[in-house]
Image 1 (spheres, rainbow, N blue to C red):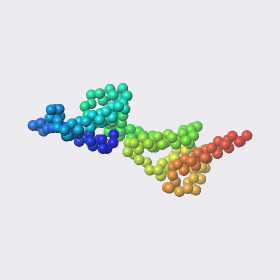
Image 2 (image 1 turned 135 degrees about the vertical axis):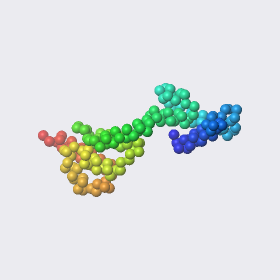
Image 3 (image 1 turned 90 degrees about the horizontal axis):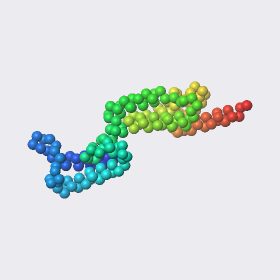
Image 4 (image 1 turned 135 degrees about the horizontal axis):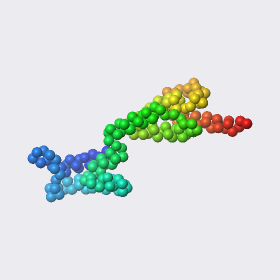
Length: 188
């Protein structure tokens, strides 16, 4: 949901509610609506329609009882992203996976890089952004197996690791991997 839509829904909800004598919010009845309230009601109906149209039967059953677009949004957000506590634990789990990340035996550089990028993107979606310099260092020092030691040393001596783009590193490692495969095929 866009920030504009969120703000609009919030304004609609606040303005459609009236206060009773004890200061508790009470929704207005339709008889109490003026033309401005009707416009806000229409905006809420449009927002609900946009949200509901993209849902499958499973998600629809979750939001069926929601009265406003904001309630629908909150319900779907909790269902798919989890509560704040779930997000925090998920972030901790993903960061542990990042710390322990290593290239699997028989895995290619591209396969490893795809897994690594997926993990980085999930961390980023939870607000944990890992700088590119740290990712380059991680791949060179802890991800690659010991059989790659000569290539790691060559890259560290020939390139400035602080400014080395991750894509350039992966390209370099992929080229080396292909060269190793070619050498294996040519050896009797």
